[in-house]
Length: 489
Image (cartoon, rainbow, N blue to C red; front, top):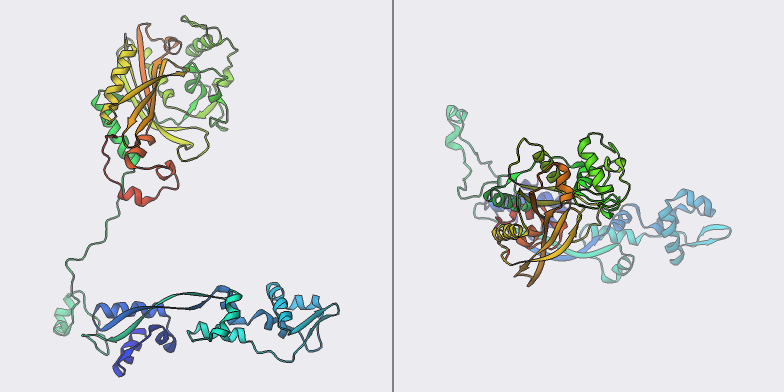
């Protein structure tokens, strides 16, 4: 209908100066008309010039008054000539109409509201507000003086309006013939292919983009770091158990049961199942002893170790719990053999979310277990590992960890930020952790860990971790992010 209206009008007229006025005159929605105009312009049947003008539009409240009348007139009409009580009037009209209408009706001296009730002050009221609103809705011009009250009552708003002026195009026809897109067998059999008008093909048009999955920046950096570990001869640890017992997460690592990290403010404890019963009893006894009274040259912590505390289930706070399981398994092999292990997986902390912290993140961990390892070996491995990440300038600061001694924080100089940035933690596992497992006395373990998010944020220039990981991530960032190039300097 819209296409026939346009082509039919242009057959007898030189132009359609305003598509909005034309749409109103033929009773067609302008959005529908606009789609037809774009199609006709594409086939050069019409020449459409776009224009923009500012005009008044009705707000939602204004549209309601245009349909139903202004609230003051609605209220006036609800008052009978003999008057009415205020309570009865409230029952007759909408609460919003009564609230707004009574105020304006009194102000305009249409009614009088007193103790005895509500009465009319005039016999008849013309609803000029409704009339002006209906004029604006039709696109008609309203005098500036009549717009004053509408603007004051915020019933209208001034905004731009896009429209089209139309003329006949070089390929104008009064009735468009639908172009065929395919030559079918039926066309050939009937012979009507000779009379068909075929649609032109745009062979240079871009095809619809293929919707495929995209690697998240964290996965790209993870793959690159995993490649470094494999190049250095490391073996990946199984990290598919997010739920861990307090025993493996804390006690096996010689972390006392009174440690602040074991508080519910720092750790997510499970309600169901709340505890585990599957613990290696001989190993539990040794851990109990080394905590309570000490052993293997250690004084221990000198407190009453509680089995029920060790059995509590939680979301693991670090992947070092996995390292403890692997070392315990290694200690129970027939003969000891050196190992290099690594893991990259998710851990959970009960932390407040801000620009640099989430309640879950990824931890990278590497460890080497061998005879006679020293702190010098740890320095050498760390320099090799971080140099492959592009962080050649390293500094080490003494630190404290319950399960490593000595312990060191790792800092790297970031050229972009022009300062030293903490990038990880490291140390040598304590004898109180290793010897109860059953490892030989001359076996040492060096280990280090860092988050996956921090190097990824530096690589991709992201300053808010919530833009990288979590429910607020913009999928366009994932789709358009560049290939990961390790080298942070």
